[in-house]
Image (tube, rainbow, N blue to C red; front, side, top):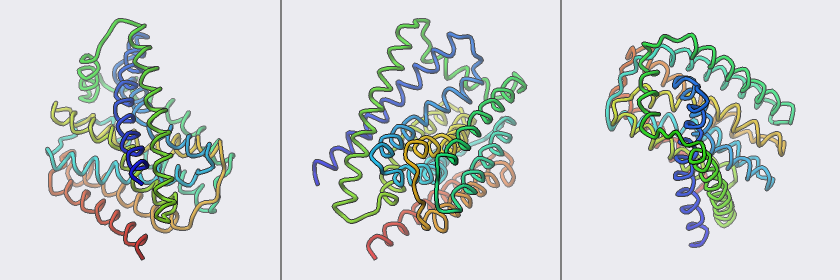
Length: 323
């Protein structure tokens, strides 16, 4: 038991460190290719920050544990809103000014609806995986067009430019090394986390789904939590919210799509009737709080409410286990 817990902790550590190095390397390579900061932030960084979830899901699917990957994708979306955004707002109220994020939020919500429709028949096939990956490609194309048409005065563009400049390097070799080094750490972390999590689940008689929704989902959301809190400290609230929106979109299309292509699986009714409704409800709450009710302002009360929703959800899951 102790060894499995150490595997999980070591895996989480490698995922956090690896994600940071992988993001820096990927962003620098994109910058050296003369890609604009806004496009880098919305696409390259967005994909890179979802790398922990992708690799964990891939490793799980290769072991025939695609249910864990499904729990990771759905659970990470719930954790990103309740834990990451909620805790970030508790640390410091947010003021979101970027009009680009409003449109990206709609795209993210559309990706959730597509994934939900595919889940409703209680089976995810390789065709479903191809549909999700195709939607991912279309979404990336749309985001690039959105970034190119966005005003240079968009606060998000300035924040990304400032953020990317801090880890700037003109060395292709160094950027490539960071990318490969980060990827290797992510692979090692994913392997350790999945091995430890599956062993713990078997020892306590907990399903792969619940492990994916709890330990794995929270663990793979730690890079987003660290990035969001750091962004708020630097007065980059748009990046903090953008991290959550982008990550949730990629979770539904890429993190869910790739494992299904590897190993199709049946879907538990718990996902359809318990976890998906909670994910959709929290997503709508987030959109309403940030873009409608607060008109860009997201204070500690709203963040605290989302955080309490996340705690209540975790308590519900664990009470179900103990029952």
